[in-house]
Image (cartoon, rainbow, N blue to C red):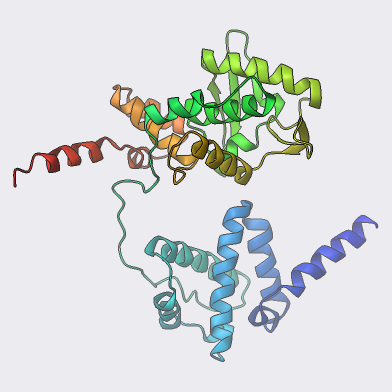
Length: 323
């Protein structure tokens, strides 16, 4: 199949999945839909979320015999009121609709953005909701993993990177052999984080020793090509590594198994290590700016959401009640 034929197939697939209200408004509406979701939005998770909310609104309007050009601020508000999701999800939905209708206005499909003036209830977060794994639990988890076998060594290295770099699980799962860098005086990991931001984090000495063993061991099976995934799944016979990279979901499931084997609550997630590492460093008096840099946050207020020290203070106060 030629490139021209492949492009035609992609276009047909995209067009066949267009909401009816978009298809009914002609080429300009179709162009705006494809431009926004396939060209403007490059992050696949954002695309999935935004497209889902746009489809829900358009389906909701179609079921009520409301055309695209008849959607008003009042109708957008009514749609939000009827959504059975959390307030943060409603805010995400509203953001998606505002951006989506913006491009419809730009492409002259509609005259005004009906979501622009719509508001949701105020929502303020003082502390993140991610469950925290304690330092003692993290140490017990690492000690419970047998690193004398390749599977155990892979899992221990993966979890250690989550702990000692505070990296997001998506960035860890995307690591390739070339992202483990020898700078001459130390080793670093090069992560590609949210928003396509690239950053390097030094490897601490004990993790470096684990990495040395893992790279040597895995390279015997997978080779030393720079572009190969650093972490891969096991072969079907469970006796070695395959060439299939571990994705973020695989890492989450692996962590759940390891937590269960170590007798630690499985409600914890890879993100729990970010909470613990950030809180631990702040407790030791490391400046907020340095912790923010490690976490890869653009705003220090985001870093503060991971700080669980306030929770400990509140519990101490409660325990002092003499009733």
